[in-house]
Length: 309
Image 1 (tube, rainbow, N blue to C red):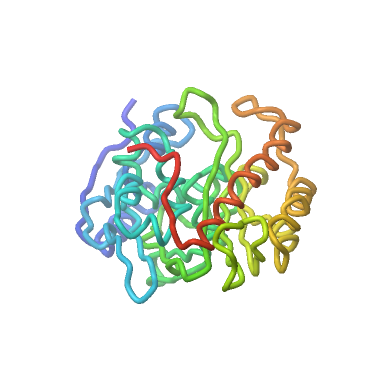
Image 2: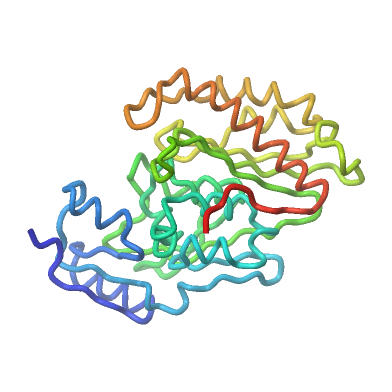
């Protein structure tokens, strides 16, 4: 079976959009192809007239820190994010999430744009971008527009982006400021390249002037938490965030766990685990990720854990 008839390598975003328009809804953007090609081969996505490979567009390979803003092009690979010198300090949770996606061969070609565009609530890169409060630039017939990352999702694998006429071009978020830290942890099956049973990204800002050696006593001024997959779309754990704000880690952690467990009702999945197990794992992930993020916020030292190269 022929999955596509034409394969293009545009050199600009405008050329890619023109190719999409020319095929009138029967073409798709492709980056690394690690998800899209499998879905087409397995019949979960239909064959198309054309694939438009955006990896030759220079502007989509931006990876920079400028004026305290991190900017990442949609065609940047997970390996490039892991290896960028400034990313470990300024986007620790994103480095940790990108560093556990698939195996090295997948990370070398899979792109951050593709991870988000497929709109899966289990997407590790998306989970981290949510707590970094990222914005996404979408290019289409109305030009280019920045929008909050959570506005891109309608359901499992259902994006708010019209993939036949629009494309993700860039991501941006604030670099790590003093007294802030982030972390990403996930639980997965032993074979190492399967979907996560559950993943958790956290970002915290602690009150300044605290003892660097005591994460439990640190007062958390603000927290952002994303756990997935627990709902059809990526979701912030708002009850857990409120339970932590204004409290020490020791005083707020158990309330945060209880809040997250009551807010989310993960379903039993034959590909992951039972609902009961996954609810328990919410506690485990928060117990691992929150103290790590607080410690990083207190010390200013961020050394990503658990990444593969």
